Image (tube, rainbow, N blue to C red; front, side, top):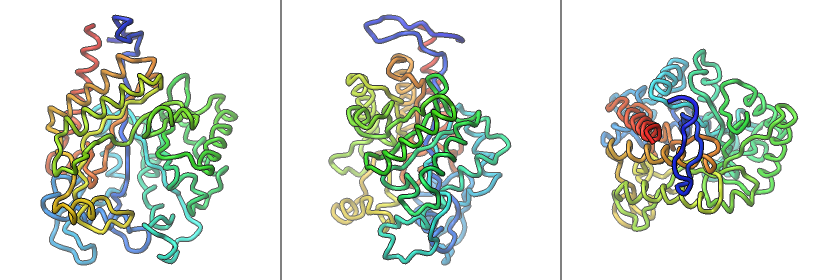
Length: 396
């Protein structure tokens, strides 16, 4: 159905809605092998924590399984830092209806590439993390990049602005680079051509100042302000910080620290409540769709960037704390619910988009990228949910 969908029932909150909700997915790109030195610490960690056989079902399609390699302390190689892998990822996303990726943004360079470890508690040094910018660089150089649009997730309090975290760009230089991205025809926009930007965390003076600089430069260059979306927290916080809309990176609730909380009660239910709460508060929303939450691989190791369950769960309780992976039917139903919410509430979801968290958070247990063992089954489930939501809306 093309053009506008006529919504029925003002009491139900329906109004005219666009015929197609854009479907996005978060990218966290640690899949660049296991190089030595500071640059490789994150890559080495995820290579190691997915080494046990019980986690091989999570490996992305480009991973390789082999005998134990003492240089990486692993039985797997996960090398996604190639143009060929990026080209294939773009094809998968385009084929199964992923309209845009939201890349977690990292510094593209550092002022010090060999800092002493004492300067980097929980590896929070630029030298340990700038390598995660590889995928955005590959994407921007890809000949087929226009098949999938893109946006940025600015990690306030961690890596944004880069100047506050060891990056080699000033606030102004970083803003100019981002505005350059906004000018590209394949950058995600909404609401009259406003470039969409996500902010994870936020509220500190330095990141609020950097956002103000970015807004001013965007208006000067494009004549519109960026559409800034806070990931996480209630609408009241997003509004107080001057954000345009609310979303989330992940929504999950496992208060009993269960080893396998049911997907329906730990993710699907709480996330639907998150959407409804934003609407009830009078906020704007880009509905998040969380496809799982099982960080078990991280709970059995000394995670360099912070304990994610080893102490509280594995050591204290004798088991990891996680949510059961959804069945493909559950993933389809939850995706359908998120898209249906967007279609039913066009004034709340004025950006006409949803975002899946995530494309490739494989070791943290919420991913939809095709896997080495199960292929495209998660993408098929997501696509089915999107199609079902649009079909139901079109039949009203």
